[in-house]
Length: 266
Length: 356
Image 1 (cartoon, rainbow over the protein chains, first blue to last red):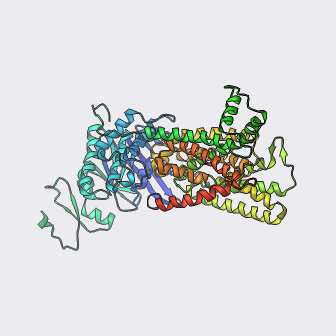
Image 2: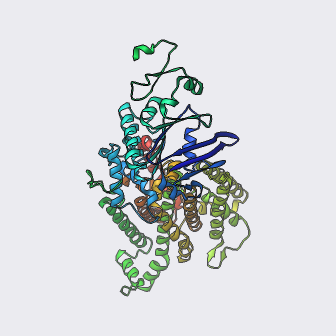
C-alpha cells in the first residue's frame, strides 16, 4: 500500500534521510524506532510531502505521491502528529470534523454523514464523552485522542503516527496501540508508527524498522531487531532485553551497570 | 468506517448554523440597517427617521411619498452616500481583519499588518506635497494614489518575505513591520518638509468620510464585494488553517495558495477602503476579535457577523465624528481608536490566559 523508494531528504546542506526503503502492506503495522534525530519524524513528514525530497519516490497504492494533489494525498494518508497543539475555542467534534476536509468540495459543509463518521471515530478512541467540549479545556492525553480521531475521520487507508502515544498514560498508550493494531488487522489500514518506547513498539507492531542517522539499519520482527548489542550501538545505551520466550514480546529495560540481575526478573 | 447502525449518543449543534448563530446574524443585520437609518436621520437639518425611510422607499421604487425636494437631496445626495460608505468601509476592514487574523493564526493581526495603511499614507502624502491636480475625472488623485500605495506596499512586503517558493508567516509579519515603518518615516519626513500641508495630510491620515459621495462607493465596491465573497466562502478552510501548518496541509489544504488568495482579496479590499476614507484604526483588529469572544471561532459565522458589526460600528463612529463637536468634525480614526483602544485593552486583560 505504501512504498518508500530510496528517499533522500536534506535540510539545507545537512542530509537527514539517506536512502530510505520501506514497504508497508494493507493490514500491516510497522513501528519506526530509533534515537532522537535519527529521522523518524522527517520520514513521516516527507511521505506526506510536507518536507521536499532530494531523491527517491513515495508510492501510495502504486501512485507517486509527488503527482497527487494535496487533497488526493489526504484521502490516502492520514497523519497523527506529535504535537497536540489545537486551535482555541473549537470543540473536539469540530476538530475531528476537520478530518473530513479532503472529502468535502470547496463550497460543501459537513453533513450528517460526516458528523456520523466523526462521532464514530471519537467513539473508537474513547473520546465520545467529550465531543462537545472545547479542545483547550482538555488534557494533553484527551487532545491526543481527539487528534487520532481526526485522522480516523479522514478514512485514509494509510495511517502514520508520529509519537502519537507520547502524551498518554500507560492505560491509554495500550488502548491506543491496541486500537491501531486492530484497525490494521480488521479494517486493513497500513500503519507506520514512530514510537519511542521499544517495548510497546515490539508488543503492538508486526514489524519494526530501526533508524539511525537517516537510514534504516535493521528491519524485521521485533524479536530480531531488539538485540542488546544492536541497541547499545544505535542508542549508545546499556540495556537488557528480558525473557524473549516467555513474555508476549521482548521487554527492554535500562541496565544500570549490572545492578539489576536479569535472572531475578525471570 | 461506516455501515454500522450507530446512533450518536450526544447531539452537538453546529455552532455556526445553530439557532444562536441565526440570532446573531439576524441581530447584526438589524443593527446594520438601524445604523444606516439613524446615521442618515441625524445631523444638521435633521430629516427624521420617517422621512429617511420615505426617501429610501421612494428611490428604491417602492412608493413615492412626495418628500420635499430639499429633504430628498440631503438624504440621497449627502447623508446616505456618507453613511453607506462608512458602513462599507467598516465592513471591509472587519472581514479583512478576520481574514488576516485567520491567515496569521493570530488574533492581534489587523488588515494593515502587511503595510496597506502606511503605503497608502505615504502615497497620499506625496500627492498632497507634489504639485498635481486634485481630480482625475470624478475620482480624486489622492484616492487613486492611496490605493496604488497600499497595493504596492503589500506587494513589496510579500515579495520580500518570499523565501525559496514559500512565504513563512513570521517572515511575512516582520517584512510588513519593516515596510510599514519605512513608509511611515518617509511620510513623517515629507510632512515636516512641507509645513503648509501638514494639517490636510494629518486629517487625511486619520481618516474621514467628510468628502463622501456615490463615486467613492463605485470606487470601493468592485474590490470589496468580490473580496467579501472570497473570504466568506473560505470560512470552513479558515477553520482548518487554524491548525498547525503541517496538519492543515496533511488534511488536504494547499496552505500557501489559500493564504495567498485570502491575503490578496483582503489586501485589495483594504487598499480600496483606505483609499476612500484614510487610515481608520482598530476596526479591523477589534471587531472580529470581539465577535469571536461572543460567538466562538468558527469563521463561517465570524466572517458575516464581523462584516455587519464592523459596518454598523463605523457608521456610528462617523455619526460621532460629525456631531460631537458640530459644526466641526473629529477625524474618525481618532474616534475608533479612542473607543477601540480601551475596549481592546479590556479584551486583552480578560483573555490573556486563553488567547495569548
